[in-house]
Length: 239
Image (tube, rainbow, N blue to C red; front, side, top):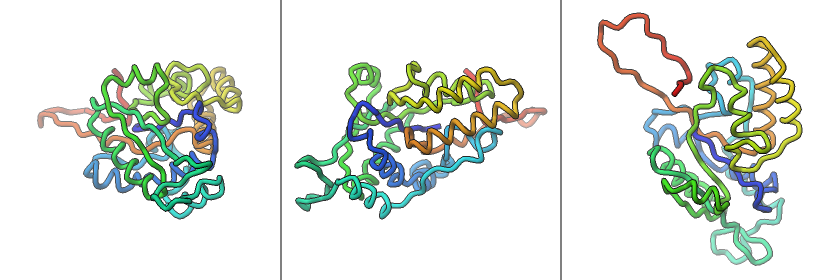
């Protein structure tokens, strides 16, 4: 999945209205259809819908007018008519970090930059394969990456590696005690169906908090000789 994480260390992004406005302003349908040339499907959450824990969730919809209203509700208004909303004399300006080794990520960055300009947010894009240096220094407000969220067919890995407080790849420093409680339950739960139900609750909690934005799932193609039999494609891959 192509995901966008908000850095909670930035006080501006601690405002749910701002995170929700950004999520509502990025047109993932158009991103998949035009920029990915149909080689991706719009994502709702971290897992594709053909996994048992990848459905029954909902995210905010693309709505520029509603996004603008959320910013207004939080006091971000374009007072000087320069095209960007401001508060206390400062424009709403954010630094977006991503890398270039996955060619879709710079395209997503450009799309986000153009989309957010429509609601008055200035996005400075830093697309570099030296991104780990910026992650380490904390010089970013938003970080976008591509990740295989269920490499073994089980959802727990994604939450323990990317979402929970202290997780090695929790680039947004998101901290939800509700998620911690659900993870404790998931870790001690057996049976695919019961684990799926808990994973759905956890994904929905992330979406309700607008802690991350999920843009798309990659549509993968397989090329093989005509004599191949018994091949079965799966919604996730393992390295």
